[in-house]
Amino acid sequence: AANRVINFGAGPSALPLPVLQEASQAILNFQNTGIGIAEISHRSKEFTACIQDVEQQIRTQLQVPPTHEVLFLAGGGTAQFAGAVLNMLARSWLLNPEKQERTLDYVLTGSWSVAAKKEADRLVVGPSGTGVRVNVVVDGREGSVDGKSFESIPGREKWKFSEDSDLIYYCENETVSGTQFGFEDVPAVEGQEPVGEESALAKEKTTFPFELLPEGKLWPLVGDYSSSFMSRPIPRLADHAIIYAGVQKNLGPAGVTIVIVRHDCIVDVDAAAKLGAIPVPACLSYKAFKDGKNTPNTPSVFSIYVCGLVLKRNAELGGIGYYLELNRRKKEKVYKVVKEGEAKRVLRLKVKEASGSWMNVVFTVLGEGAEARFLEGADERGMKGLKGHRSVGGIRVSLYNAVTEEEVDKLVAYIREFIQEEQ
Ligand code: PMP
Image 1 (tube, rainbow, N blue to C red):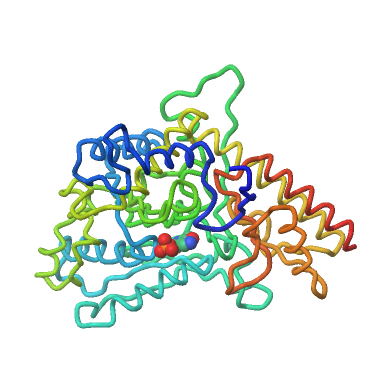
Image 2 (image 1 turned 90 degrees about the horizontal axis):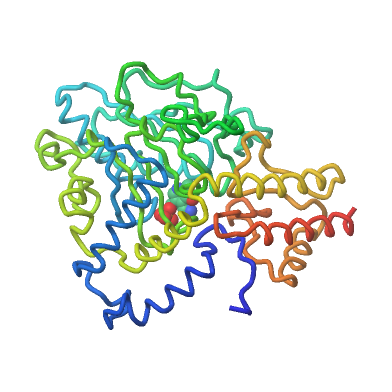
């Protein structure tokens, strides 16, 4: 492990060293079965216990209410761009086969929400998509300096939800654009342990404008949590129809997508298709996964196992509250130094700080050849994965759970040194 570098990559990304060490043993021999974790049957009693434990850990750490199921699918966030649309449309058809117009509402705050909307556009072109309209609630690019970038989460006055939509999609953290919904939590009063509704998790607020959603309805709200899952509590989780996340940022190796679904959104997709809804492949049917106890087909056994190790470690460290505070400190340190660089005209934040992601901090290094110098210096110091996404360039610092505060301190020290040299 001595030759490992500091990995600020955006995903797949760093995993905790103790987890990797334990997993490397399990590759050879899983729980004394004499069979490695990559070789064992997904129907063995050992793995069945493992997947049940992973589900339970997620339920406990995120306080998932009994109204929701925790499912393990494959195909990453990308498959859920389709999965959410198809299952929610099937639900709509079953609720009202005669409905004249069905609407899918998209909140665009970065390139991943744009990609999700594009998938919806693809799915509704045929006869069974007739009458389905894909609508934009708000587009974060409007009002940006160049009209093309996502610089902030748009103000509430710009949002326009449809009257009776069948899906409302938003991406909680935009991994490429670096925008994220704000998270405000009420600090606990010292010496007073909050209880019930007043508990720490019930109290947090988000800048997602829940108050604009229609009252008295089960919201068809879909949150893409791919790059912020498990990094802090999920505000108003119970009010979501679906929350999904590929695990490869904060939780484990790529290959499994956690889908938290409200029970009314787990529907008989075949009955819906008979009424005219778009047919749903079995590998995307939430009902197939619920009925098949998460193993209707072969899941990514290894990935799920490693997620379990990470979750066990999280619990030992203090659960989601621990990561909330750790990640808050990490991002504050990075934004602070980038702002110092801004004041000296060496760096420039790409996103307004109030909308700035805790997980992916994106900025530009100003000046001829300066970005290359920055990356080279980082590389020499054993810090990798800092190059921005190929579509937008610049620098991206990903601060997922496994990136330690000490590692962040090293990066911050380097950035400060770089600013000194460049100014
Ligand atoms: N949504 C978000 C926010 C993402 O960051 C990503 C991938 N990084 C995706 C969706 C697509 O996920 P996948 O690559 O797992 O299909």
